[in-house]
Image 1: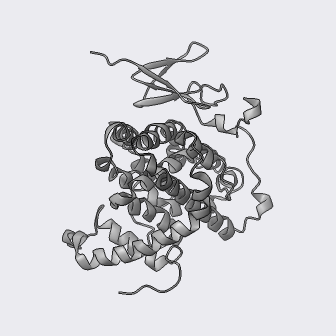
Image 2: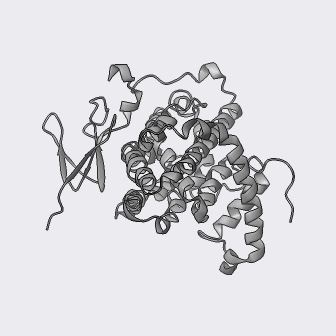
Image 3: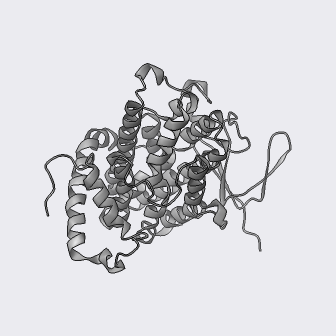
Length: 305
Length: 64
């Protein structure tokens, strides 16, 4: 087995291969022997791709991690600050104000790879945590998984959003259409979820993900309403309130408890945060370029929009 | 037996409330609690009061 010399993060074939390897540990494939999940040849290939993927992510986030580590403030505050201070390209102001219905569908399609398994990768973090951090993650995931009501399961709500927007809501329906970056954004969660040594990075990534969702969700919901796709807005509407709660729990109770237990984990938590910000920036940049949105069209959002 | 209500203020953020059934807003209107933890707006700027909608992040430090 061999990989080309180019970056794997932007290589669609490699990211699709990795997604397929990971999928053996989630829902599998029709007609594929479930024992392949632990096929040593496939595990070897997965490790080869993961090694390159992780090395590229570490290189891309090195400056961000170095700048943040050693600040010594409360971890929750600076995870929130790190996300708030991120100056990467932003998609949600454009989706709110200007995106066409086709562009909105394009966005929903690209995100489907991760949202149709929303919170599944982080469920692998639960048995590796202990004490207060474990309790907080379980509390947060209970909400993600519907809070006892199957119709509120977030991944089901996303499927309904796809259907309401006239898209295919099937799991993996767009796997051959989405970009390498969209696959990478989903794969990074499995990389962190399925490798226990990357537990703290998984926690940091999750916290950044939750902390960068409430305000953008409000904008996407508003964009969907503007386009007459209000029925598709439920999922985003739910995430305005849900993630305003989750970002506090994830940063204070999960990251905070983990660092209190082991202060040496700060660097890895920040690495996870930086990976989420890096991939989100790449994805926004990619879609804005694809839609030929000029930087001046993408003006920053006003207060309380 | 009813579990005690737990209230947790977050610096520059909302107040997390666990174990409550109802939150009453500033106009006296009752809002049913529908998730295990709710974030109650503490900055006064939320568009979904009494719930936090993360608007506090758009408020500059000097205007706080």
